[in-house]
Image 1: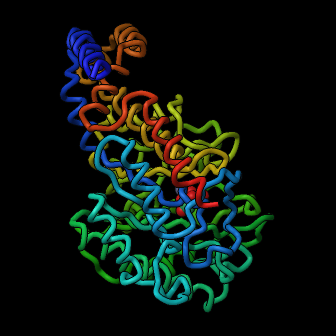
Image 2 (image 1 turned 90 degrees about the horizontal axis):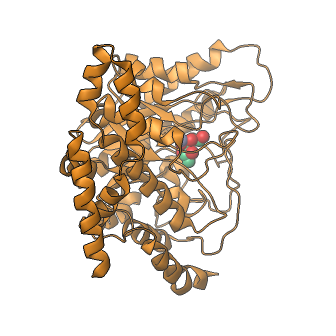
Length: 421
Ligand code: RNT
Ligand code: ZN
């Protein structure tokens, strides 16, 4: 109770400080509560899934670590997700993959359909979350020499086209059942370890396969596709069929979403600078917020400069309504539920800090060439008491304030996760 009052009083002070520069903290709180994050199921089980959990992870991505308590079954994964969600303020979505189908018999990737996701839909309804989808195009013997939809073999392409079509049916089912649009993200690993001769034909084949996948019409109210490019993967260093430019063009010409994964670019490239270059032409964005440490390492997202630049661009350029903010990282060296909580809370904090700024005033100064004011205000803003507003946001959403959530994680690992091994 003492804590509750302290949080309130600190908030009242912060509210006044922000009001002095024309920022309404109540408005920011309201704005933040409308942002749904798309939290990725695969942080909970190191991308094993339930279809072929013993298969090695392929596609040039990797998880390291063996922290105890990994979720091994649908019930364990949903239990962990529930725990994570209880420590993250607000209402969110969960991103699934074909791999997470819950089937009544052994099924291959291309056989999995909406009926195999009823488990998740029932859970999502109970939990009050939305669902997003990802077709799985890796960790399967039919990924031949790192090729799927762009394979030179028709038989291989056809298998993966079917997986893609099924993922759309599943995503549509999520949308219909849960009454909110489900984003269906496509990422494929296709590419070469060493220098290719023919760079054009694989891309033409990929276009053909994708066009075939998206041929059937679905109501966009329920589902929309997003396409995620990449620079390279481990073992696929020299050429990636689905490059950024490829999917940028594909998304625009097909009126679909473009997915920007923060880890998929040259290490010095600022992904946040791309949103405003794409959006005047494109329908919308999906983000995979991630943290590349020297390479596409998928470290847990933290409140760092890269994240702050992403959230500032979204807020300042008013792109939130056209952007789906998904998370994509996998770290097995720490508690996997804590990883979700840290990544999600950091993303929300960075959004809030971006919202707590006199944006219209700054835009005006910029248009009047008052760059002195622009620099002075943005610098001072960095030490404004945004943490007090964040605490108030957590309190109002009935989730632990500050580090209190770690006590709950310690209890959970002791009572639940550590008992699994
Ligand atoms: C891989 C992509 C892709 C995956 C997930 C598991 O580099 O980022 O989004 O991480 O689909
Ligand atoms: Zn990604």
